[in-house]
Length: 149
Image (cartoon, rainbow, N blue to C red; front, side, top):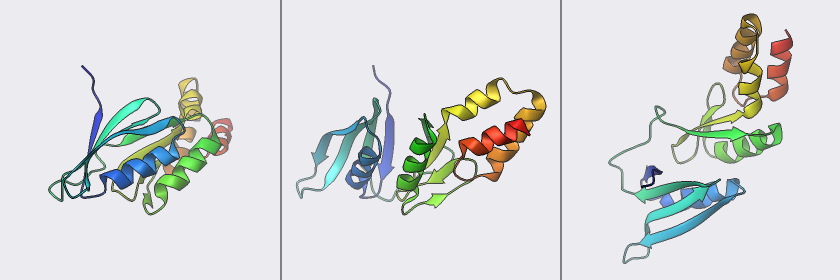
């Protein structure tokens, strides 16, 4: 048995899969099922070893921010590059969240954020959380500065 993420699109599944696989280094489109007219119905793709299925199901369902994809970035450069690619045609949200051009919500967060919070004293932790809530794209140095006070 395998569990993967199933994403519903209104005619943009192949475009979304191509966009996402262009943003992540270890990524690929694995399979495309097409209707008789050639349009993609289902696209199977992988991002960093995680399997996704993008389905062109029409306008019946739309994505909601109640469920999001989470990208755990190693460096500020990774945060910056992924943020730029995903917000292109989308919109920034608070605290490292965004909605891309396809209506999918993402959390783009640096691993350093959890590391800084993990061993912070309560006052430093509160400063870090306040800094996160004031940011859109997360800035690691800003979190380090907030921790220091």
